[in-house]
Image (cartoon, rainbow, N blue to C red; front, side):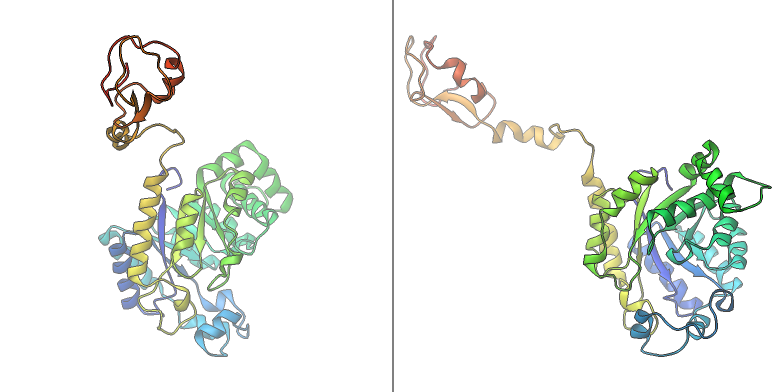
Length: 359
């Protein structure tokens, strides 16, 4: 995935299945229909990831229109182990890659038992050292979201991953993480296995806080592939991110934005997801190379659009070429107008009819 020149598009189902396997399978169908490369879910046990009285985020309160606890909300959104196996099998059958974000250590074990190439780590887990370490020790690739983070936060997370990938048997600590990160083996493992995602963790994210130029900052700081996990409304931001060099696009989608739940309102509906995929494919095709040369389709138009040096009026043998008797007109299959200054003041070697090309 990280070595491909094709933008990797992740349709983020997240918890938009509302705890229903049937709805999750419908989301798979819609992701396939839209042309996404992968569909991503979330794997967690509510009692493992949140205290029972932890409050909702402001966007969750607004989107769910309730004052329930995070635990109560998340408990309703869990998928059990059998659900995961059925989803994985269904994705294989449908030809789309299954991805999920683990939020607790048991969930890492479950996902590691699947024959999947990578883990997606959500922005909220970037400081969860034990989870990062456990994921890295599976040896699988990691897509790491960087919402709410500084460059220092990202470097520390990468240090834990580098340690997990390379320092088998060593005792984990901040010093060991840093040593692994700066080692040749650690840098090699990170380069081969990690993709970063720029992200603004708000639902929906305000356009003025997206800061797309941070994609370049992450690329320059860490020398890794960088994509975007986008939470804005609409599809403009992912398309712009691809134009800026994003290698991965992750975008929430839902069957219906009016459904109850924390993320539906900030998600695309299926036709919008399909439009986003199509637009991204068009943009990545249009990006081309850094070479500035005529394209095959341009070459056939060049002589039609460009001009040649021609006689502005009848010119006799021996007559002096002047700005009055020379002109520039289409087609461009003759002498380029760039040569007009070479002709001025010289005598005509033959007779020219009006509009005849000068040779």
